[in-house]
Image (cartoon, rainbow, N blue to C red):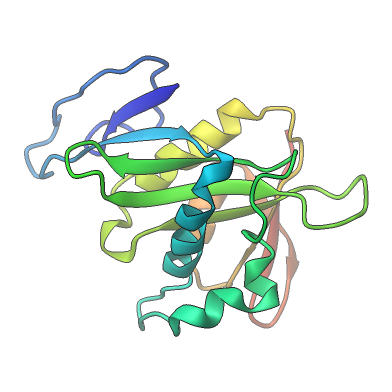
Length: 181
């Protein structure tokens, strides 16, 4: 199933059939994008989105940083039974825009899955991330708790809070957030 979303359309509007939407605000340049489920063949996409997610306003790390164990565990061997998520592509150019995915990283049976999320730096704050998170939350309502690691000053913390995530642990360089349903 594929979902077509216009970045000028409210982020909470996710459609279950292919629809092309026009811009509702003339200040937005138009870019329609499709959101689809991730497949086992999408591991290369997730490596790229993991790298993009590590970019901050100060720039990005070396490309091989994603292979460090603390990051690679979110992608390496993608396609396990509990792996799930969505990817967004520009419908006109096919350009990769962003992805959101969940993966159980702990061996503990009651441990919540971790959420990984990335939107290319030049495309942030345009509703793509909100559309991806909306799709994930709606598609997997049985996930009563999801953990997120983000730096405390990361602007996406506010986005997560809009989706019901609350900070449950604060470290020196990160926060862990959970969403209870």
